[in-house]
Amino acid sequence: MKNRIQELRKAQKLSQAELGTQLGVTRQTIISLEKGRYTASLELAFKIARFFGLTIEEIFIYEEESHV
Image 1 (cartoon, rainbow, N blue to C red):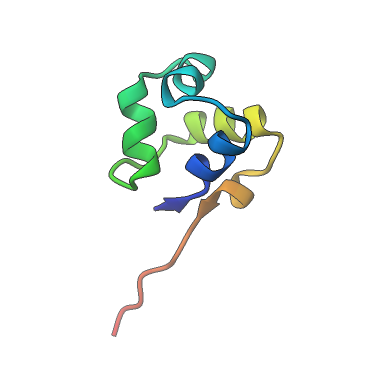
Image 2 (image 1 turned 90 degrees about the horizontal axis):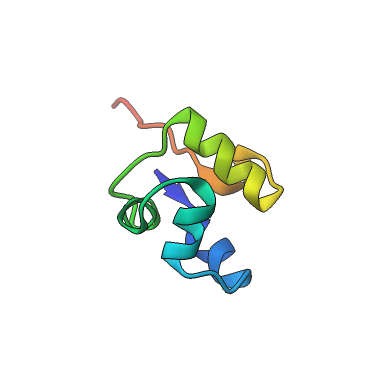
C-alpha cells in the first residue's frame, strides 16, 4: 500500500530511527513501510496518523485491485 510516511517524516526532519522510537517500532519497520514492503496494522496506522496530526486516509493511499 502506498503511503506518505517518508514525505511527512522528512518534512519534520526526523530520521527513520527517530520516527520508529516515537511510534514504538524499529527503524527497519519504518523503512519497510516507506518502501511499501509492509502494510501497517490498523493500530500502527492510527499511531502514525495521530503522530502526524492527520487522518489515516491522508497518509495511506488505498488502491482497489481491479478484477477483470
